[in-house]
Image 1 (cartoon, rainbow, N blue to C red):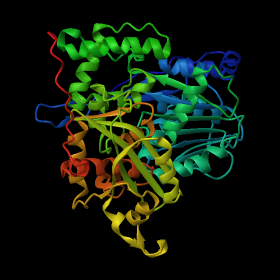
Image 2 (cartoon, rainbow, N blue to C red):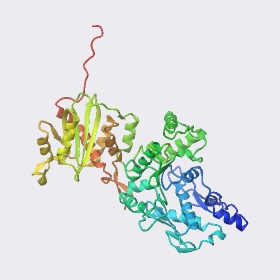
Image 3 (cartoon, helix red, strand yellow):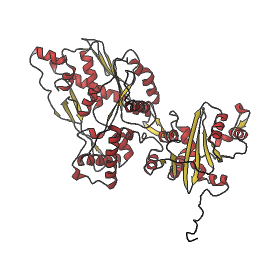
Amino acid sequence: MAVVHDDPLFPLPESAEELAACLADPEWRLFSGCLYKIMIKGDDKVRPDGSVEEADSFVLPFKPNRAQRRFISRLWHRNLILKARQLGFTTLIAVMWLDHALFNANQRCGIIAQDREAAEAIFRDKVRFAYDNLPIEIRERFPLDRDSAAELLFKHNNSSVRVATSMRSGTIHRLHVSEFGKICAKYPDKAQEVVTGSIPAVPLNAVLVIESTAEGREGDFYKMVQAAEADEASAKELTPRDYRLHFYAWWMEDSYQIDPRTVDLTREDHEYFDAVEVAVKAALDIDLQLTPGQKAWYAATKRADFNGAEERMWQEYPSFPAESFQISTQGNWYAKDMVALRKRGGVTRVPALDLPVNTFWDIGNSDGCAIWFHQELRGEDRFINYFEAHGEDLRHYVKELRDTGYVFGAHFLPHDADHKRLSDFNKSTREMLEQLLPGERFVVVPVITELVNGIHQTRKHLKSAYFDQTACDKGIKRIEGYRKRFNRADNRFTDQPDKSNGCSEGADALRQWAQAKELGLIESASGRSSRYEEPPPADWRT
């Protein structure tokens, strides 16, 4: 990587009085281009052989772009930024925090990054770089009392800027949590520490900024965004405890466009852009008209950077808020499958029919239990309801079943339902359920040797599945949130499930359905073919 050019800062006012007045004005300090420099990295290029050519960097005077200016104008006490990639918010906030520390006494400004490498890069390339490149006559006014690899402490006013992976001690007057969605996805313990330790350290009269691209529908970042979105939709008057949502789509960045003559758009591309313009109007009340250059950039980026995977584009370059969470993280088992299912209308209104209802269970080793309610019609697997609870005994679930009013076909239980439990009077789960529901039929699904095989079977049969969008809403979120365990040491996802986010019971219960279907157990339990055939129509001539 090389620095191809280094543009000078704009000249400072020549008179001492004018300079003093400008330095006392925060808006001038941030918008003038006279104080702060930033380093901008260009886009890496992929060579024909697949190798990556690292892009050059550019050193420029800092002047906020359109998205950054909008954020500054809407700054609140507690802020959530849901955004597309590379809009420069980490750079912006690093400069803002440095500026605040330089010109205000006894202030503690912090940035939390997802890991040590990211923390070091933010401190080196954004905080320290901006300080080192201040005009010499300005930097001399702000000598350092402490200069470490992660903190600048200023001698003239006892203020500091620090970058770390966690902050718990003392009061933090300005805190930025960078890529919190990624922290929630990969480091749930660290995310919990941020929520319980770092955020409470920010007083209500201070400023907190939590920023990230989307990383699935589970975790604190998603919950925070949902709550903030609801407040915005209801036009609630925010208190200092409430979060203000800031959403920045890819089309808000002026540079995200290329020569449209270089890209051929498909029919699916045109359909997507038409749908986006409608969705943006509905979600943001903006009459969006994408230019040919913007459409070309989006299509080219999806093909080149993500091999055409639209779900990755939705995550990294969302067009409207809800699109950010139409997928989950890279490590989610069923991300692509659920995208395809939604695309074909598999999440819709699925009414209960006058047919037997099968249930599929997972009874967790801890205290969770999940149940799917299913009917089959003409080869369609129709999920009409979902229920889960935690910390309840079997009588609770039996009552739930009875309260539905359904006529049941068979109840499919996981393989360990036949295991006798000394704590339950040496009875198995199936035996206890047979006592509580006399006359009902229970089937135990055999254990599968490899979990991955069961997941492949689930993917296969999801192609014929339909879910009621209301009654199965929580279960759908469990499927979409079911992810692989992340190995921090190897920095990769494993083939073992992550059971920390509460999604495993719902996903495992659905897997019982797929395994039972694969083995023909559903048809066997019914005593007839599960293929529903309507009687032939009456002869119209009679």
